[in-house]
Amino acid sequence: MTGMWEALTGLGDQLSAHVILSAAAIALGIAVALPLAVWASRSEKVARAALAFASLVQTIPALALLALFFPILLSLRAVFGEGLPTLGFLPALLALALYALLPILRNAVTAQANLDPGVMEAAAGVGMNFRQRLLLVEAPLAAPYIMAGIRTAAVWTIGAATLATTIGQKSLGDPIFAGLQTQNWVLVLAGCIASAGLALVADTLLGLIERGFRERRRGLWLGGLVVVALGVIAALFAQFGGGDDEDRVVIGAKGFSEQYILARLIGQRLEEEGFTVEYRDGLGSAVAHSAAASGDIDVYVDYTGTIWTNQMKREDNPSRDEMYAQISQWETENTGMQVLGRLGFENAYGFAVPSETMKMRGIESIEDLANVAREMTVGGDPEFFERPEWIAVRDAYGLRFAEQRNFSPTFMYNALQSGEADVIGAYTSDGRIEADDLFILDDPRGAFPNYDAVLLLSPEASRDEVLVEALRPIIGSIDVAAMREANCSVDREADKLSFDEAARRLAERAGL
Image (cartoon, rainbow, N blue to C red; front, side, top):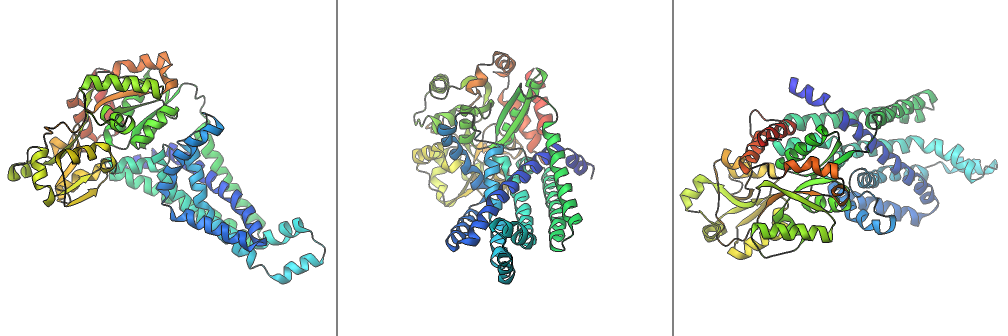
């Protein structure tokens, strides 16, 4: 219970950010839905089109809707300039507002359609104009039904806002995704409890307002509105009441343990040098690279093989030093980013099997694997089977598996242990390879490229000499044994470390 309490009390920052995001999305949804509902009440065609659009939006998975706003906003920079944010609050706000639209719009249209015609005729008969009928007759009668729609939208939005973590927006999804990554169920549960608690509180307060409108009790709905407003103001003060962001550095991280640890190591070092840091965790490879190139994040760790195949679309496999030199030049010329240097270790993709399987079936290389692949199930992270590296290694060895399955990086190793997969596309610096007694198959044809970890700076960050000098000691300081130990410390079943603590220990071992 102590761990749960500590986890819950440590969520203040995420809770206030979650409140602001949800409130802003619901407010934007209301601002769009109500005028649309008034228009729809006067035109059947508009009503059908508006409800069809809102229903269509609801069929799109929330996670996909959030992700789709990244390329949309990126393309809109041609119109609105390079300052338009493509990650974080803005795309999350737009996606969640669209999600909130349907229940508010549907209830408002239904309420308008079911107004008593006799009342409307009486209002017209006493000489009320359109504005007077709308504000003095239609709005009070429709308010309880509209509030019911807003209550539904609020619960949906607060739940879906946890997914905003995946596009770099701070929310109560942060502990959920971090906990899933490391199988820290206390963190997952704490995030779920906080999100569910917030939804219940919002539903209760909005229910009071709805009841006030229905029973025509001004004190009730006004009191509910005041409490809601005070809650949002408190959240705004918690987020923005602390001061200046001039030296804030945004650090990006992809969605696996190593990236979380390295982001914290970078952040702790920068904080020691007087910078304020902010984290954008759980980003996909393509999103992280684009975000750094566009300046939405200032610094992050990537891997040479990932940039070589995904960004540069190269299929050859040169030496480690040649690949690094070409990547540095390509980033400078094409994105303006600076590759500050290699961290000192490699985290390559490799096929892993249990050592027992390796001995029993005589599989020591990918060539051996190709002979028995048709009898086996291969597992990989959600990116793996879409990456050029997989296609290259598949074609190089003629790999044809009986079944191909996706797992989150966390559960991929559990799948291997439980028999859900026979072989996985593992990360060679993962501490679970040694802990789970796994064997990485040799790659005699060199189909997988090098994956040296490198530190990338956005174009603007690369011009900040103080920042560059603060980061330079990290270059070449982390060997693969230290990284494996750090990864294992957050991924193991017992005595897990937090990402912050693992980063501190890694920094000590690296002499930073």
